[in-house]
Length: 236
DNA sequence: ACCCAGGTGGCCC
DNA sequence: GGGCCACATGGG
Image (cartoon, rainbow, N blue to C red):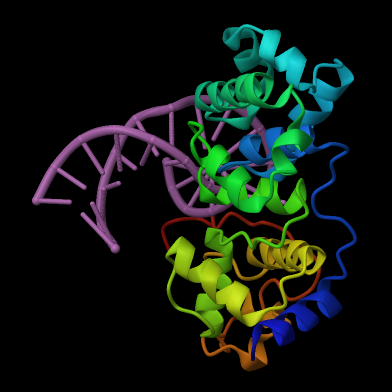
């Protein structure tokens, strides 16, 4: 199995229609920070709240005291660090790019990436998410989920960020829309099926996966989806 | 009461 | 170059 085959099979199986809803480059940037080590639903709630308050703008965040912003994003976890990161990003955009995210992005992927990585709290993954989803540049996000899925299928066993990203870039046509879609498929697949404890019995690529665990009991086979919490009567 | 979540940076060797 | 840790809330 190669990357294109994995992509086709995940696409045919999951049929995702949207993966990073955002109405502006700034919304992508804020979302990329808020979603760090957090479920997307938590970040999305905060984004909706900021939007409803009319403060999902560079200028509004830039003017706001950091303590106030912390309170607004608290439910996404790591809120002190994330608040400082987003404030630093807003300050950087005001000082260097007329508070316009697109003014930074239009410099091109390499210059933009260097600037993003110079900011506290923005690492390779967050920078590449911004480049891909806000800038439309074909940079694949070599997240932990990607390493897990490609590792289990045996396609690529190295989880080092740069080497993993290099593998994707070298083995897939560098098309931003395709990268974004493929990334979304892998994230969805890793969260629902290829989890820490994988559910191989419902995996669309199990016949091509050397890690597939055939003898998975059929417990949750039907769509019942009751999470029983293994909390049965303890003593025998 | 666990484990996991669309990471990053600091410190250690 | 890796391994460990703090950062923090929310959901299953």
